[in-house]
Amino acid sequence: MKNLLEIARVVTKRKVRKIEIFDDHSLRNNKSKFNQFYEALRDNKFKNDREAASTLYKCSPTDPKYRQLKSRFRKRLLNTLFFLDINMPKAANYDRAYYSCHKDWTLVKTLIWYNAPSSAAQLARQILTTSLKFKFADLIINSSRILRDYAAQQGDERDYEEYDNYIKEYNDILNAEIRSEELLQRVVMNYYKPLSKTQELTENIEDYCEALVSLSEQYDSPVIFYNMYLVWIFAYEIQQDFESMLEVCEQGEQFVQKNAVYKQHKKTVTFQTKKMSAYLHLRNYRDGRATAEKCLKELKAGSEDWFNFMDYYFLLTMHVNNPLQSVAIFKLVYNNSKLRKQDNEIVEKWDIYEGYIEYLIQVEGKENPVLQKQQNKQFRASKFIGKPTPYNKEQRIFTVHVLILQILFLLEERKFNEVMDRIDRLKKYANRQLRREEYHRPVQFIRLLQQYAKSDFQPGETTGTERYLNQLKSVPFFYRGVNAELEIIPYEMLWERIQQYVR
Image (cartoon, rainbow, N blue to C red):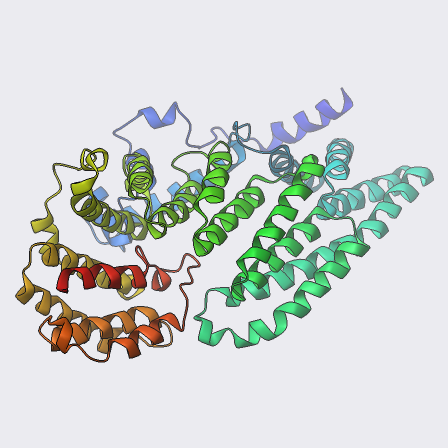
């Protein structure tokens, strides 16, 4: 009762008349500008302030009406964060506990600020108990500091020594965790750079790996173990040693199985997605499918992680030339209502995937009636052939893939003059937009196409193809989820297809 009286005193003095949040009740008012703003953001309808201001008030983003709405909207959105539903079916106990403890920690600091030390200490004890179970080193130290101070004020030497010991024990662990995070961040910071610019990372990453192993041997911390596995995975991925990469992913999964209390949904999904990436590069469809069947039971369809995983799974089926499975995966993603709410880059990518799927159905469906039945009757190759390519510089590889697919459709129709036009556009685009160190493989493939164009598609008169084909093969396919590295169908397989048209 003492603590309740203490909290009630704080609330009585400082309470607000109304807590402004977004809940089911408030979102029923469709005429509210707040709700219109919220729903538009949720559905990715606004790309910038100009679009939002124009839609909501038909004004500029500097107009006071819009600026006031945006400010109040942001405050309401932040308030809502304190009332999120963390009991989602797929949320791990570790994730729920971490969120709950941090929310309670905010309450502890609030109670201390408003001079309610007994209530703050009681809540800090609850945080400490949970944090010790899950080994949240930062929260153990923070809550122990509050409790150590409270014990000192109460003259309780036994409690004081207990909390002081926790602080000293976990201070070393927290410093080790911070060091492990630093090493992982140094890898991630350089991971997505073009391979030609990752020499420094390649030289240092082995040292990072060994340092993390040493930390894991000294400290029993799930944070350190997870960071160690992730850095080793990145190391083998950069070295393109995909078999070793798979081994580390499996070791990470075994760690989760043996230490279920530390299971984190995001980390588990990362291990499985990296496994799918390895299977893609190894073209191992059998094990890739087994991983997908397991992972898709845990992933929420339509989530960001789900779309990312399905991208690798789809590409795997395309790279092993399994069109029926490619069609099945494509339809599962393309028919998901959440797709159109994703970033424009993801939507554009799957729109291009549709074109490649329809091409495979059209070509390979001639000898496969089951595949032929999967054709989308609303898709028109003629419309795709005339599709413009207004992609921004981050999506410039999409221009390449659209033009290549147009070439494939035109070759199917034996329209060689139009094929020449697309090859010429690819040539100009490569010369102006594609840096060779970043786009080596597509540039070499475009050079191959140029050789056929020079010979007017006469195989006997074509020269120079062996040179560019060898240069293409000298840099193996390597995809890290970066657009520049995307190959819907490997360029070597595309080259074989094109040769069949001009023999």
